[in-house]
Image (cartoon, rainbow over all chains, first blue to last red; front, side, top):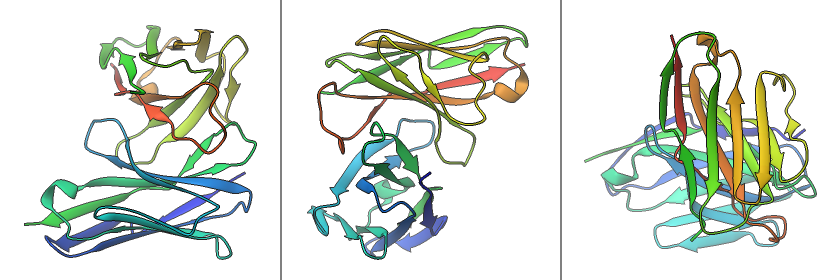
Length: 113
Length: 118
């Protein structure tokens, strides 16, 4: 089955700096890669996603890049703010597998004011 | 749109009790719902995929007789933890995918249920 590795597990940045979280996946059949933000005790919220037919997607301060050859994708947050502090999960979905998501281990992002 | 409601949000009960958790899609139909378990400071682990009108598909290592799943309508799936024990204490989250969407569409998550077994 699919295996998703996520790094780093914790990330501390100064407010205003950029944050980058990286994920690798094992199954080349994966075609959908969402990123979720989860605050303590709350539901995961989709913040951005990318499909395998594009290499980059941007939404204001958030961007995601995908390298299908290397089987890795990254989340980029620019101009970080304290409210960006949360746990971020990447995930991968395998084509023809019922849209089942395999999640990475998560990254705890702390933005210091 | 795409709101998923999960109930209850918090359960504390004695060992041996069975607990039912409901997951409802409020403004869309969901042929497929997913049940996850999340331990503190860990990732979401898929337990089972719930399909409307058919048997759920369980992930390896998840006891189907322990975690009963019923998906009787396009808007409701239930997870029953039977004869719960302290090791079953965890955060259980459901998600749903809008019916009819092609592959590669987001899952929408409920608020989760924190289960504590004494």
